[in-house]
Amino acid sequence: MRVLVSAAVLAFVGQAALAQGAASPSGPTLSLAQAVALARQSNPTYLQTVTGRRTADAAVRSAYGAFLPTVSSSFGAGYQQAGSQVFQGLTFTGSSDAVTSHYSLGVSYSVNAATFMNPKLQNANRAATEANITGQAELLRANVTSAYLDALAAQANAALQDTLVITAQAQLDLAKAKMQVGQGTILDVNSAEVALGQAQIAALTAHNNAEVALVTLYQNIGAPEPPGVQLTTTFNTDLPAFALDSLLQLAHGRNPAIAALRASQRAAALGVKTAESRYTPTLSLSTGWGGNSYQYTNSDYLVNSAQAGALRSFAGCMTQDSIRTGVGLSAVGCPSPTLTPGEIDAIRSSNNVFPFKFTRSPLSVSATLSLPIFDGFNREQNVQQAIADKESAEYRLKAQELQTRTQVTQAYLNLQLAYKTIALRQQNADKAREEYQYAQERYRVGQATYLDVTTAHGSFVQAQVDRLNSIYDYQKAFAALESAVGRPLR
Image 1: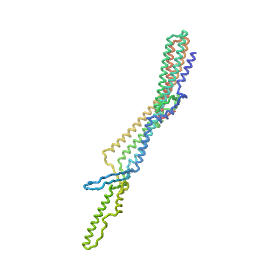
Image 2: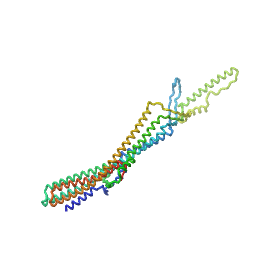
Image 3: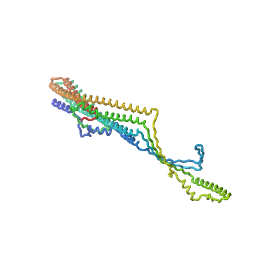
Image 4: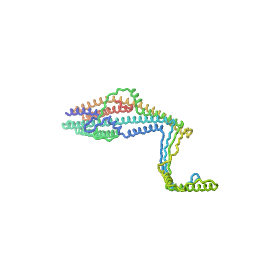
């Protein structure tokens, strides 16, 4: 009866080694595709990269906006106290406080060769930014995939350790039964109890590692872990049909890191042309409209000034008439020395201009053609820096291509090794299972010692763990190959 139980336990161990996190109705489910999609919405590091798109778009709009004129406007108001002021050696005296206001609207336009080059440069920079975002998305997918596989492996190992606890318990029951019939010793029972305790500790550790792996997965996703989540994606262990040459060619054309550096190289090449365009002349055009108002706070000041002027004019007129009369000429007649109420009202009305009754300034238009001659070698420095940036981009691209080729080749060879290892680990696990079953049977009938059973059990446990690890080593090697190529391959 105990042999049958042990055989059933061993069969369950074989199934647990293939566990891939089947869904359970007790909690929410999470597939790998869902994890990657959620990470692209929540991972803060990736989202920080995505924000660069807005900056790049704004730079492109600004580059095209340079073809439009610049428009500026201003409005101001002021207060001037009565008193004497000296301007260029002349003294001006005001007998009344005054308030002033002014406005201006200016339009200017400036263009040179850099104006035409900058949109191409900013478009190239935006393309580089998009390529970098794509690369970060692929890196995020690789990280989430790796964490997902780690969580699956940890859960499968926890399930395996649970079955090993069952086998250890069955072994303890067998040792106790042997002792009861006088065919075993208390030492066998004690050894079985120690083995059971070790299996229970290993199971506790495995379950803790599974929880930590799940937390790490959600850290990569960038979201809190929901309670009772179940991982649902399954992976096969079939040998891939693609060849190394096709993978290298695919990586050379599609790897996001290479694509990003190519875009940066194109942007750096345009940066050289943009820096060289600083040697070209600049045409600037400008025009504007404006006006101002000046109002005395005491309107009687203008009335009194006008009245004084009328009295002076009357006095001068009377003097002229007396002279004309003296020489026998007829008098011309003088106007009234006092202002009429209508004239007083007109003077006061003309003073009421603050703040929006402006006197418009004359229109002005100017055009300037400037040619840079010498600026302390600043342009030369900028050109050399742009050339250095271009060469650095080329070197980084070449280094990335070589690194990608090495990574793809290494990942491909590791995948082949992992696939072959699965078959060997399976053979070892089958043989270890048979040896363990045989040792149990011999011990039951008294033809083997408990040490033989313990030795066979240790080999059996290690073989099962190695087999489980080989399965997930293969999946991790496949994920590493996808990361090196820069795109999913399943």
